[in-house]
Amino acid sequence: QVQLVESGGGLVQAGGSLRLSCAASGTIFAAYTMAWYRQAPGKQREFVATITTGGSTNYADSVKGRFTISRDNDKNTVYLQMNSLKPEDSAVYYCHLRRFASDYWGQGAQVTVSS
Image (cartoon, rainbow, N blue to C red; front, side, top):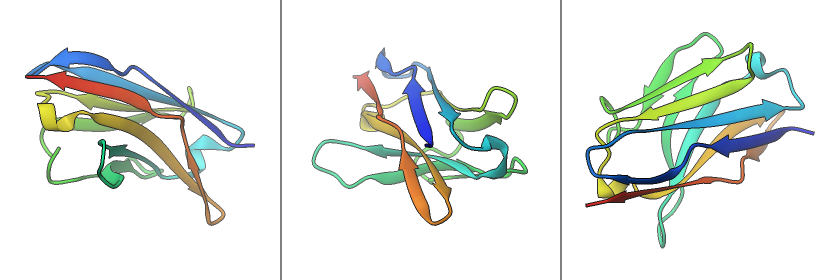
């Protein structure tokens, strides 16, 4: 059973930083691309960033240059470093893994950025 557990969310002022973590279990973590998504109230879930097994990364235009995704395969953990946060970054952040055509999501981490 694949499990993803996010941590590190919270309340921060605009311009501040937060680091999210997502610990995976129940699968060979190093074998899969990992991603972060977010969902703000009343909006659809949207892509934030992804990192492949080889370490290649891709970002949504809205976070490019401010957010950094990374992974530690020894710890089965993916990270999202978020700098220069803006109020519009406020959302529940979810980590994601796709395995054998099934999508796995964590429970979400709330990020609130005050102006």
